[in-house]
Image 1: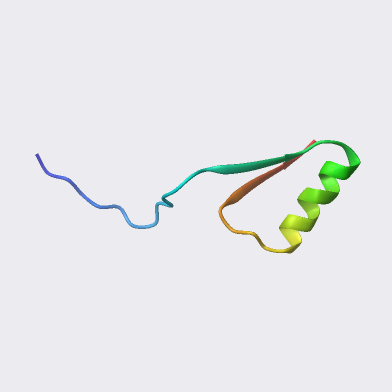
Image 2: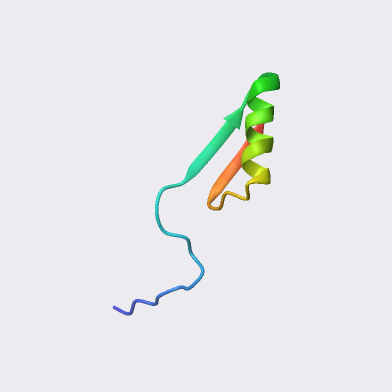
Amino acid sequence: MKFEMVDGLRQGPTLKVIGVGGGGGNAVEYMVAKEIEGVEFIAA
């Protein structure tokens, strides 16, 4: 059996930040402005 390493895959936990309402949207906007890496941002 042959295994191949694939570069470019991010390892570690998957973080998703969901901002709801005005305050939540502001929090998401702040985190995006700080260029936090490895996080998926969602605003509703």
